[in-house]
Length: 479
Image 1 (cartoon, one colour):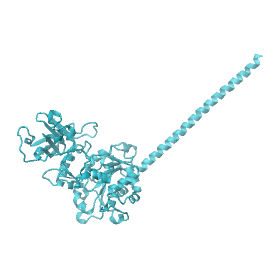
Image 2 (cartoon, helix red, strand yellow):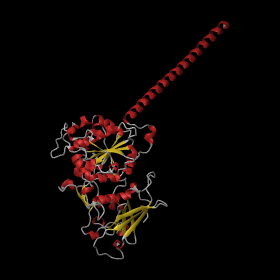
Image 3 (tube, helix red, strand yellow):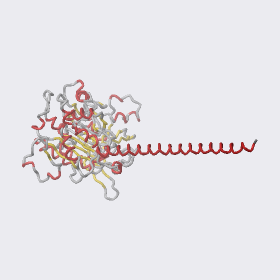
């Protein structure tokens, strides 16, 4: 009875094993199929993403990882045939025709009398699609305003049209007025922090609260300059004309650019190195309390006093650039030290001034600070109110967007100021020596303890290395 049973049992066991093996093979095949589908979809999405990036930006993966240089930036400068005559000299201070690309937009061809022999040192001027009769189709309703704002706004569109087909890589488009003074190396350094293949709108606001309230607390003011990543600029240019038709009630060209950028869902990335400079008078207080961020731009220099004594506005700016050329990242960077023996607070705004303070302002008279006579660093960083607001109407027009401190009515009770006289670099070890001489004030002083007995201060430093991070910009200064 058992013999017939064994073959049946054996046959049943063999069938079960075959089924299990078949199921395992099917599961493996199904897993492999799903894996292949996943890989194909991932590859397709990656290819699509790369195609979009290639459409919006001319850079490839290796280029996007390299540091941004001046050669990657295109400038668009809004001007006029009248203002360009005087302001072209300022542009020559910072423009490098061997490295830079860009153009100046004027409303009509420049007269032959302005075709100077040194024009090759400047960006080329263009009137292409930028004439008033070509912008007359757009409405402008700001009462008392200047409809040239439309022409200036369209500099964005025309600059992109001129350069987006360039064989050379364009990462950033930077726009400013003809009296905007850029520090190109610092501009490139600032922009290198951002990914140009993403959408970025970079600049800064006004120094006056009222100006920001009128035009936008998150708008990049055009006089200080602003930057658009190439990917954003290419998209913005496609619909720019139709966009500005919706904003006839806005005042300036920068307001129109701001409105159209907002429609694309992009906000301002604020960089304090851009300066609108909506102040008048003596700008000493602002310049000697500059942010630790690199100086990117200055503006309205013709509306403030010459920044160096016994000088014209232009020659003062040219003198400043003698320091900029040797160490652009360090210009205006602040360093503070204390002399315990004389109870002096010494602040260096490199390339500009050295100030020695021996008197405490009223707001720290009772402070328990160093030796009871030194200024705290936080108080030194407050801008001395040597300047005036842009408008005289008072109220919010006199409210600044940064911390300030009053100055003494008596000039002899103010810090003793030494202005940069000259700067040089050693060919032996690269040490930079800057010499600062005292600005004369007719004051009586103690010949033993007063810093007025000093005629000259020398500061030694090394060129600031942009590749060193987490280090104070003036850590290596020696007196």
